[in-house]
Length: 394
Ligand code: ATP
Ligand code: MG
Image 1 (cartoon, rainbow, N blue to C red):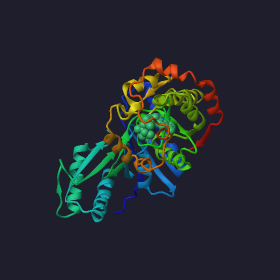
Image 2: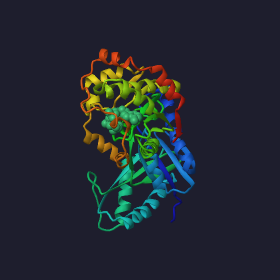
Image 3: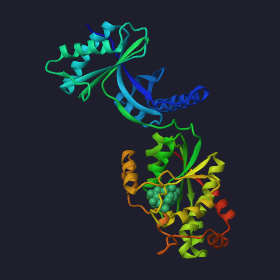
Image 4: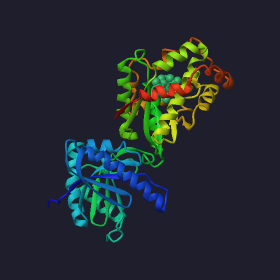
């Protein structure tokens, strides 16, 4: 007997260890973030039951699998499955499973399997272990020469029994967990064209920060291509970070001024401080509560503990450096996973590499740097940069 089944995306949110109002706040953000992805790509029905979100796609240019992959980038979700929803009835379940396990087998033969049943509806007459046993018998009689393996099965048929419906699925796309973006506030990512800063943005968004980004561009020393590369990186991390604004600072004039007026072995550190002053202003104007950078301890001269101390002094906000204790290989691994790596390694100069001294100070002393910096009119530099600010919607 043919059983009517509706293809449904089954979303598993991460366990929120929160209660009461806080929990509602987190759940609402997650729901909003899921819907903001879906609204752009499909018409859908959305329902929610304890610990699950269900989405039925009514119309879309994308397949369910593609949509599930996009949802896997939403922080707060641990997994997405393409499930089949049938009316909750035990016989209905076995009838459906008998066909379903054969269809799956035809696509990809398996020799071992198990059944995992979750009975969320405690009014359902049969206990989950008994459902699993009966369902296992159905699969064994539908397909010859296969065996049950509870510990290392090639395929797991999941059965979730809810009040009105039963959901059946055999695959789960793993998502990244984390906190829903926006639940931790908003921060400004200093986004260069390199490998590190996009990864830093990804990691802080994973802890619930909504991002805006700033890029310092020094035309003609940095090419239009370098700027496009940063815009591309911003687009690649958008599905994770919900980043929708990239502030571009035209930094040539301040940079030339620093180059002319300041001691050359202090150029890098002074430039980083000036970038911080400007980042402060952007963060303030856009209600950001922190600044994120891709610095990693001892990676280069400007990332010694002394240099970071001097840079920090210029920041009015908490500076978040999620990569601080990571090796390059670990950072690259994440960059590959989130698909920024290939774009990051395109060979366009970033502005810091052009004005660097041959032997930059690796142990700057704050009081000395503040002294050297006095030749600059910082107020004027900030004003100049803010006047020429370019904002790009991502
Ligand atoms: P990345 O790989 O992110 O470019 P990096 O290893 O090249 O980092 P630096 O050039 O010292 O290191 O930059 C350290 C951090 O400062 C970057 O991770 C980024 O957050 C920020 N930064 C550097 N250059 C720029 C820029 N042109 N615009 C915006 N932020 C920048
Ligand atoms: Mg760089």
